[in-house]
Length: 239
Image 1 (tube, one colour):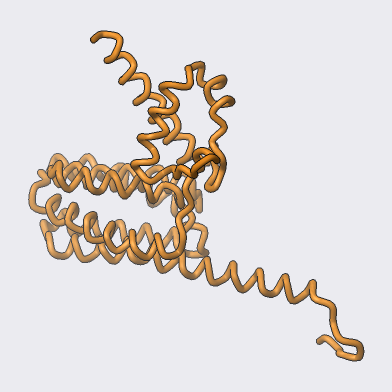
Image 2 (cartoon, rainbow, N blue to C red; image 1 turned 120 degrees about the vertical axis):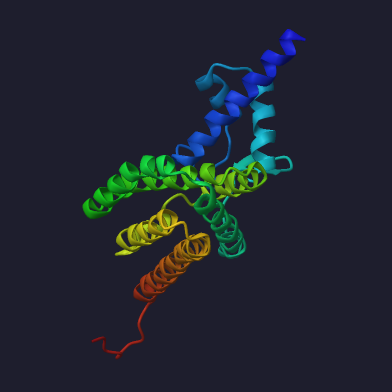
């Protein structure tokens, strides 16, 4: 029995490590999972690695293709449109319950995080902003004190980590996001559950809007690039 417990702990640790590698883009979206390389780098055998891969496949972070192996999943535009409304609903409920249950001491502990968020937004430091933003979301989730709700949020948050903080690349989005967070925090301090929920839902959906804009701009840029590469008809002048 002792050996089996150790094995279980090991594959869970490997799953945590792989999850972190995906979130930091050490393993990129679409990348093939090289099991030989990973066993060598992590200093483990194939058995705990394969058990860990099963966990990440179940979470939606990896996909298994017959006779080809595992690949880091890629979120399509359809996936984002399906996931974000659900995440908005769930995190909105977290904010609702947090506004009802949080003590003055709980909210006081959130003050420094929001001050840091404002500093990172002013500096335009996307990586630091994202890390602080993630902590705030997790803290509000914890203040909701609802393990059933928390389990659902955790699962979708892992899947959304595949896109990480892409939405913050949209010019002006980091400052808008910060303003949205400050409004949510004000609603929490005012003990306004409905307001906190509505603002949180809007905050999540604004992220999706930003992703749509970025995708449209990327598609337009690709079309312009292709047009420049196409041969022009003789006698046609360009402006």
